[in-house]
Length: 379
Image (cartoon, rainbow, N blue to C red; front, side):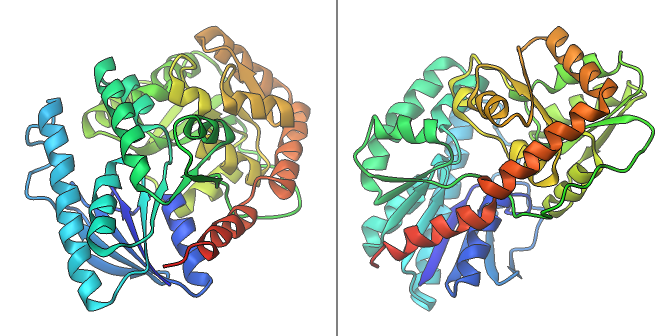
């Protein structure tokens, strides 16, 4: 089977898309990923571990009008139209068997292609896009996107959700077949290995950098706690990232790394004492999400600090793999101090985390579910 994937990032730091594409390649499928290189910084075409990557560079410059919602929407539509036209050209060279859209901001391109070529269409919803937008933009934007998503998913053939709560959400608005494939990571070891003793308790966050991740709160808390070293890295909108860098630079015990290649995140997590993933539980998308950080911590045997009132917090408490705390600065401060001062607790939670990864939360299991889904599709 020849698979076409759409993703609205340059496909340089997206472990979910990579893991899915790589699993399909290893199973004997051909995979082409059409990606959006909106900042025009990457190769136009390349082969990456057997995955063909083709990047679209839209003619608008990265900053052109993107401060306003209408221009941002136009830019998004422009990318999808160019991606669709490119897909048609590639299909003429070698026909695709199935279209796999990663997230809502690629779905129109997939629907156009399905309508034109009558190909099966998979919608891989990494998160609830409308809920996510509502946390970053005026509420009417999120409402509009939720209504649009409810309509567009009727045009798909299969839906992939990342958590059981998200599956429940989709199940309430469509009768389409829904599979849950979590963002789990490949097992690194079956034996618990403690972090290297660096003399200070190290707290790590490497991931999406935006205001929904409580990173400013983390910085303000950590800079007042002795004996703690915090490491922050990832990708996000340039303005926010630079502001975050400035906050970190003003703190002597925080290191800001910027972009981190995703194949370095697991080694960094193994060196750390604890991972961080606090999100605002008032946001619906945050309540039903289950972040990459949690799975990275599990396969590395490291505890995590996350938020009560979220699915991530629920799993953390059920599996006893970290501390789920209220979404307040004081609760975060107490959690950091508790883990800093209790190495035995860190090890106990870390061992539980690795056990959970081995028995339930690993990509070896999730990859098999993806292949089962593909076997059910008849091009």
